[in-house]
Every structure is written in structure tokens, then in C-alpha cells.
Length: 155
Image 1 (cartoon, one colour):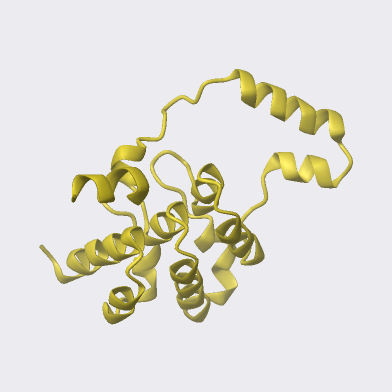
Image 2 (cartoon, rainbow, N blue to C red):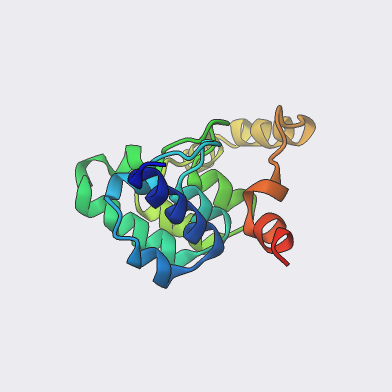
């Protein structure tokens, strides 16, 4: 296993489990925070999904120092299912992480844009359509999130 792969594995693990002190000790290059693992997730996805605000903030700080002009594309990196860190934070109800990501150039959703520009019928249509539709691929929380994955598997 290459050194970068080992570092990436550590970043993903510490971001998922919330071990901020260990994460800071990894001494990773900033691009590794948005590098996808073997199932397509990044350290930013894992920290966001699990409400580790301090880690999300740290990752954003690292990305800003690395490529400040590319923050929008960096925080909007998608996993293999097309989900961003913002999607995962919202999916799990992590308001502080959602606010932090939006403050740092995460894309706003189409429903938000419709609402903000007074297009109530469009926003209403989104809500009604989303309620009626089942997701194409359900999120496998047992293998993705600390709350239903890591903690239960390692007890």
C-alpha cells in the first residue's frame, strides 16, 4: 500500500470517527482531504456526515490555504452517488455543518434558489415531487456513518 493510500485511509477514518487530534497529526497534503477512497467518499464527506464541525472547519481551512480560488469546486466534490458533503450533512440533520459548508461556497440547492427568488410554486413542486419519489439508491448508513457503522461494528 502506498504512503498516500495509508494517509488517505487515516484521514477518512479519523474524519469519520471524529478523532480531531489524530487527524491533525497525519500531516496530509490538502488534496487528500477531497481525494475519494475506494467507495468514493472523502474526508470532508465523512466529517460532514457525522457532525464533526471542528474537523469540517479544519478541512475547509486546509483547502482554503491550498487553493482559495477553487473553494466552490472543492467543497462541492461529489462521491460516486453524486452526493456532496452538504448533502450528507443535510441528510443527517447536522445544521452547524450545513451552515459552515454554505458559508464556504457549497452550492445551494435548487429548492433554496426557488424559495429565495419568490418562486413558491417551483419550491412547492420540488417538495411534492421529492416526497413522492423513492431514492434510486438508498444510503447504506450501516457502512457509511459512524452512528450506524463504525461504532456498532467495533463494540
